[in-house]
Length: 253
Image (cartoon, rainbow, N blue to C red; front, side):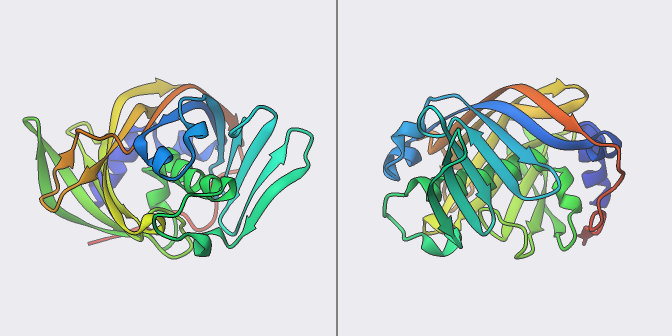
C-alpha cells in the first residue's frame, strides 16, 4: 500500500517537484446547496483567488464575499480583512464555535473553506505529514472501473473534515474520490468526486470537484450537489530549501 501512495505522488507530479513549491494559487469558483443552507450564498458562483501555503496550514481568499475583502484561514484563528489590511471580523478557536443547523458567520466560512482547500490542494503529498497513518481496504467499483482504497487517519494537528477518511485511486494512481464526514456540520457524510485532472507546470490537479451526500451503502446521491468547486489558472511560488522536517513519516498497514 505504501507503493500506492508513492505511485500516486508520482502521478500527481512527483515529490521532488512538490518540495520546491511553497505556495499554490488558483482561481476557484464555488457553488452548492450547502452554502445556501449555511446562509452563505454570497460565496457561491463568485470566482476568488485561493492561495495555500504548502508548509503551513494557511489559506487566503481574495476577494472574499465582497470586493476589497480578503479571508484568511489558520487553524486557530480566522479573519476577514479589508484590502488595506484592516481587520473587519475575526474568530479565535473557530472549530469550537460551530453549532449544527445554524448559519455560519463569515469567519466560520473562512475556517471551513480554508481547511478544505488546504486539504484538497495538498493531497496526496500531505499524506507524508508526520502522524498520518493509513491502511488499504476493499477496492471500490465505479462505472466499470476498480479503484483501490485506503483509509487514512489524520492526527489532531492536521485540521480537516474528519480524522478518518477514505481515498480512492484509479488505475493511474490519481485520486478520484474522497469520503469523509463533516464534523463541524453535525457529521454529515460526503462522497467527494474529483474530475478533469490537468497538469500545471508538472503538477497534476483535478479542476472540477463535486460533493454529494453519501448513503449507508457508500453510494452518492447525485440528485443534490452539496458543494462544487471549479479551478483554473494555477500559479506557484517556489523555494529551493529542501525537504521540510516532519515529512516522510507516513505509516501504512
